[in-house]
Image 1 (spheres, rainbow, N blue to C red):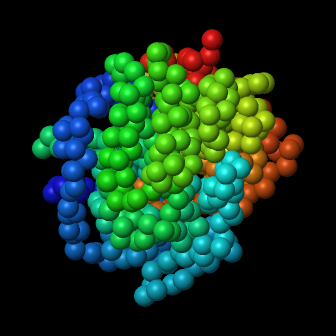
Image 2: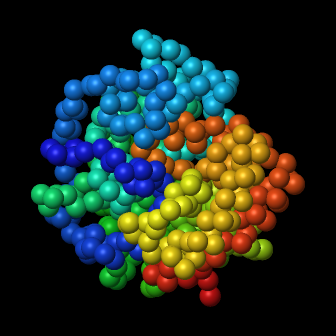
Image 3: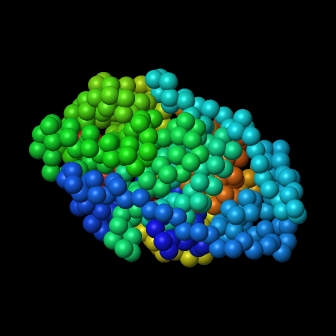
Length: 445
């Protein structure tokens, strides 16, 4: 990354997830910059930054390390930020003590595999949402830390990595930092073949015909391939639905061409209503629908909605924001968000106080099973079915490890219902008016 980039230190910014919130794009000119101009696209796709050296390593005072211990230091030491004990982590994360430091390790064989769709896409049962590594939650982390996070993902058995072309941030020098570029650099170091790479195409405005659409999508996909430093993207989504006159069939026909040329392997949609899913699937098999799903965001569960449609057609579901913008990980208990999440209705001051008590009731259920709030929240999503692969995100190794443990949590039907009931009293929808204008409901006629 560019000179001067630092690791985020504020917990509220560090505990990130792939929130997929696109209403923040209205706060700057990001969408306006997404023109189909090949010169501009080439300029932006060529941005590659170099990493900043880490500061000198310090020593720990104690073997037990506070969970907010600095990311860079832990990276240099090669240790987990967790207070790793057998009591906390059990057999899933057997501890090693190296020179008085506790280090957590696990084999990739500990992570289950799941299939998405019926076309052959197989990946880890839990994925990783990479958006927060570079944008929208504060300063980007260092390139070296991205490598550390991805390596730890693989050690935990997580190989399903999610990004998007729109995950970008304007830097102080005016350049654009792409999440895809940072991931591409890291995966080229670790080994591309070890990952299932997912990215997304975001709709452009002002396209007049199918030729414009085809040119735009091909240019976007080629730019993503270049930034990711790969020949093929494993799963390529339409990030949001195109507005009329562009039809979903037109988009999928172009996506199918990309499959035929070997640029992408599998197709997906994000925030797509049931009728769009059916129409798209009739043109070319859809492997996955990426949709917000958590104990708070449950609109996709309505009868005949997204979940029912996916199950009928044999399409996998990839939940984003499975811990509800961090609220289901215990954030914002004593203060409102200081970033764009302050506009999320259930985090507004008039709702947050009552919602905190609801969250504490869910947390009490988690403690009864020796789980954290975020682990129970993730487990609830994962226990929705074997066709579900959530993509929580974080910059903290400790939280990454904690999330991965949710894979092994089996919940009974009665427990699922109890947890659902406890969380059902949350007040406020999953997004404000601007955000919901891009949600799947906006396209239901």
